[in-house]
Length: 481
Image (cartoon, rainbow, N blue to C red):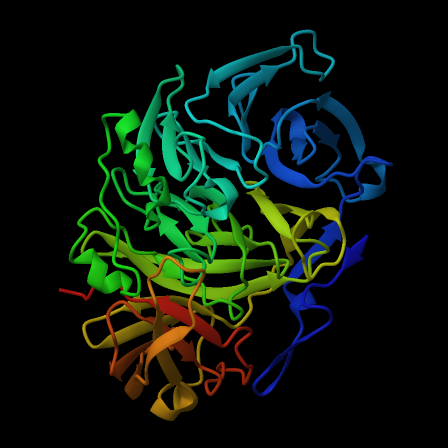
């Protein structure tokens, strides 16, 4: 079944931009009678695709890449697992991260049904609370699986499950290495194109808004509720409790382990429940954004696009809307080398714009390049914007074509935060490059620690087209030296 993204059209300044011009999404039929709320997607040999259900089943799909999706074939590979969120194939084994452990399973007789189940590591506790999710990655360059653990009960201090709110690395031989603390409520975990690990933390206690966070080894991710488990290991210390009502930028000066959010997703403006994290490494098979990071969104049934850069050794960057209109709330994402994006959806326990209780879909680029901001790089006096297609020099070189706003969030133990400490940065100069593929903005009034909204609705492409997505949000953690 084929259908367009963004409903039918996205309304942009200066005209209508149809998403169907660029990307095609299709629904992959799921096993009849099964309530297949996807938690994980893995790519297997022979163009098979494995998916895990939040109800504990693993299914193998044949035909998910083919033109005629009505002929897909499903085989149940395993059942009785505990809500797997993270799965990959390696050397004949299907590895998965489920609530109580990291597990590997395999088929011994070639019938594509699991025969052997092995616990790789189980260093954390569970007590049955619905919120005790565990999210796991593919192997990193050393073969380690990274795991992000939700707090018990969304953040209550009175829990009895060790290491909730922590992150681990699980080595191939099963050693569990405490890696970060301070996690609240992850919705997904993965890597950027450089191979560094990121997870999405959701708005809540000590999280003014949802964000994409770098899991820096030894880092404190910001929520102190799980710090009490520091006494159970000898790798990471308790970094201490931040001052409630402060700001991330202020607390970074006091707590050296505190890792600021790499990119804040302003609540309601860029979704409100970010999930899966994957690198775009197709080399152009999925459009002009190779090297960037894609992030799923559960509540708004979307995929966001993130540009990341390191400044003074700290990650920061910008986020744009990208794809939307999926039928349920997206949790797992998986991008194949040929440019097929597989997404899985669920809305059990949560609302989702898509409306359906679950979904399995694929999206492919149709070969036409949209007119978009591609990158937003910080400079000493502003930003440099790069574009997917040449800009119109007259509009792109006019400072009034760009509008900006900036704000931050209260860093506090209560739930979330409004936008506070508003500022009004102003674009005072816009210099268009000779090739018309980039513009250098000189901006007055930028604020360290703030989210900076850029609205570039005033610029046009060289052919007169409007930007597909004219707004983006850049988080400044460090200045260019």
